[in-house]
Image 1 (cartoon, helix red, strand yellow):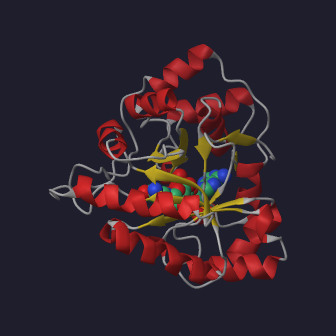
Image 2: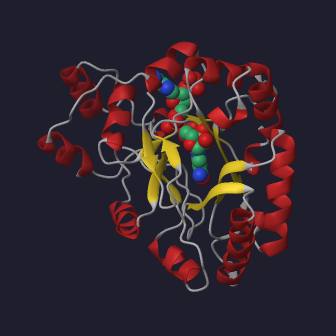
Length: 283
Ligand SMILES: NC(=O)c1ccc[n+]([C@@H]2O[C@H](COP(=O)([O-])OP(=O)(O)OC[C@H]3O[C@@H](n4cnc5c(N)ncnc54)[C@H](OP(=O)(O)O)[C@@H]3O)[C@@H](O)[C@H]2O)c1
């Protein structure tokens, strides 16, 4: 599906990307080649995933030209601040065997929920990212897991507006306020765990509606997000699932069904929150 969202600076972001967290178990580039063969042209990784080397190798071996691939990476929360962010960026480039990124994100706004100087740290990271952006080393810069109060804090010193915010979003966990805030700011929202890491795939309402629209439950969950102009980055490890998640039948979910899904009680979230200690995932 070769469709795009256009970011604040005009850069085109594919609507569907391939999420690589634990896609290789840290030891295999074949899965990356497979995702490219399936047709994905956006790959989402992070320093934290410890798979950038395999992604770099997979891209090289695939024969797909680098400029056809939208490549995202992220600076991990223990590397916040000006110097460490720069170092993290260049280390990612080296592992990925590339000389630029398409999108570079701050993975989490705080090293831990109790951190007192997080505002200073993200201001330093952002300054480094703005410089890399101005130098043409990265085509777009953005955030991940930033809620409105984290973005407000960043904007106190930012010169360049963030272009993307990657948030945990799926049926049962829609973070409506954060999504609306980003939309008002022109920040493109991207959903991580769009399938709720399978936790919401078996929900009765999802199964019933998927059947009604004649699509698989995974395709239904992805369409639910895309219909709200939210970019998705599902992870899958078989060619069949990779294709299923990319080749989405064109369905239009009715307003009534959208409201039903958006008003479900909270379910299936990861338990990860920037301002709180992690809690066990809610199945
Ligand atoms: N920014 C952040 O803090 C953050 C956090 C987490 C994730 N992410 C990003 O978001 C990406 C996606 O999130 P995620 O990996 O946590 O979860 P996800 O994409 O919601 O779910 C992945 C799970 O769904 C299964 N699956 C995929 N397609 C399916 C299908 N068509 N039918 C049935 N099951 C299917 C996969 O199984 P198989 O693998 O066995 O095929 C896997 O177990 C990550 O890979 C990563 O790039 C970002």
